Image 1 (cartoon, helix red, strand yellow):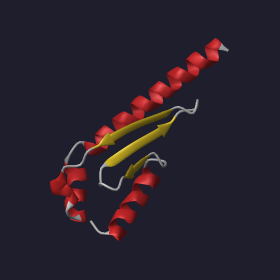
Image 2 (cartoon, rainbow, N blue to C red):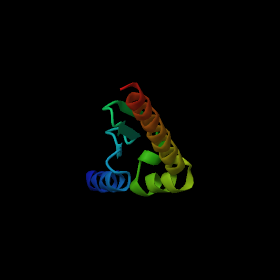
Image 3 (cartoon, rainbow, N blue to C red):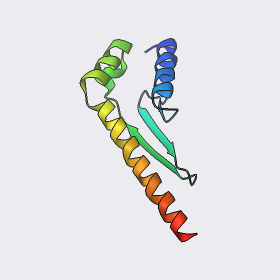
Image 4 (cartoon, rainbow, N blue to C red):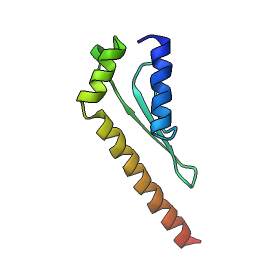
Length: 93
């Protein structure tokens, strides 16, 4: 994947997932969620090497695998964790 495709795709991920998802330098997907209590939750989805060779293969991987569902699931789990921690924090104060 060339630099322009990388930057375009990263921009798309940032906009779609509210700056919580991006590609790292190894073309793996990083999920970074900051809770309301400023706790950082991180995950990484490793993209198989075969799909990192071209932009089209990479897009094909994203569209034909469950990676989008996995991203959404992780973000939802982080959101639930965030709400639980916030509720506990508010109950303790």
